[in-house]
Image 1 (cartoon, rainbow, N blue to C red):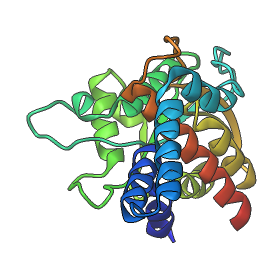
Image 2: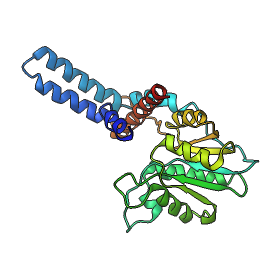
Image 3: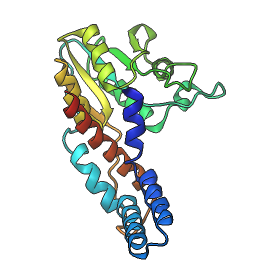
Image 4: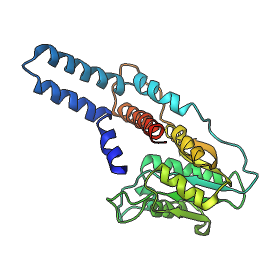
Amino acid sequence: MFWLKKVISQFFMPVPLVLILLFAAIFFARNYQRTRKLLFLAVTLLIVLGSSWGSNTLIMHLENQYPVNNMAITESCLVLVLGNSHDENPNLTAVQQLSSPALARLMEGVRQMSLGKNCKLIVSGWAGGVSTRSHADVMFDAAVELGVDSNNIIKFPLAKDTIEEAQFMFWEVESARFRLVTSASHMPRAMTIFNHAGLNASAAPTDFAQGKGHWWQIETKNLLNSQRAIHEYLGMLWFKLRY
């Protein structure tokens, strides 16, 4: 089921979807009307999803649901940083191996720790099938490089996705309150999953992707933001259908 949802979701991402439409247009090349419609749809999707206007429209509803969390942690301090990805390279430090979202999440996790006392940092993420080290292990090393005491870090190296991260967190803390750190666009789905699991999470979003730009500029970063948003909407739909 894990790999099935990953494969199916790829067909709805901006670049694969545009490519599918273009290949379909070539396949129906002898049918002028159908080819014209497919090409028009492909170009329209590329323009809309690649523009700052289109990408911001998709992602703002997700990112605006939870504000930046600057509240002091007055009770037991637990900070969970959800996993993302890394590129394993022994010539780089752990911090340098992290993807941009992963680094943004970890930095926010460290900042959240500064809002409380005697905090524990929890990092998660499996190896993804392509790395010899789990993402949690790399996040652990990166957190130590950033000054976090290794004795104050807990790892979930087997968690493959947000649902499994919630399961591991429930086994670890049960009803204890904690700060949940993830990308702003992912936070609504993450909070839905963690609340469904009966966990007492307080949102601490980071890695905000909305940005200003000329409406007529078509850029790859906008396509990436559109992909983020589409991925989250599909993930929420899948979760609602399953649970």
